[in-house]
Length: 134
Ligand code: ZN
Image 1 (cartoon, rainbow, N blue to C red):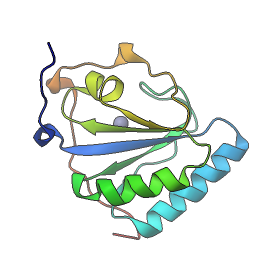
Image 2 (cartoon, rainbow, N blue to C red; image 1 turned 180 degrees about the vertical axis):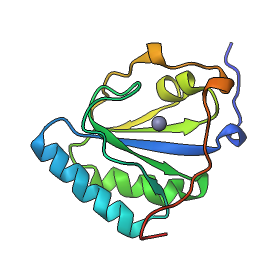
Image 3 (cartoon, rainbow, N blue to C red; image 1 turned 90 degrees about the horizontal axis):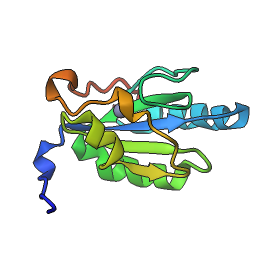
Image 4 (tube, rainbow, N blue to C red; image 1 turned 90 degrees about the vertical axis):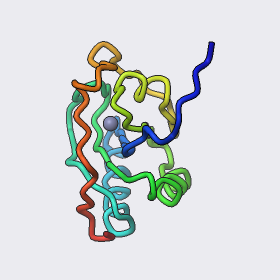
């Protein structure tokens, strides 16, 4: 049976912007600059190697539910060939990354084995915008 989940459990979102070669990296960094200038979000540092459940280099953008429409709509129009994983943060990291995720571009593999649905293991920090557009 399907159980309804209220959107009230969403404390924030992440967008993970992946790059797999030099030209994707260049576009990802251009996008990062634009995001910095235009949106009130928390930009994470660029990971040049894979980390956690992610299977390609990437950077993370954390954002509040209030920013979802403007930011995700903009990403839809500007991600070009980049793969982007957008997931809610509800305290159930495994479900958030696998079942509740939204992808732009190619859907990349996610390492499910490092993710847990135990809220005690999923510390969700409040979004602290650090962008010029804040
Ligand atoms: Zn994330």
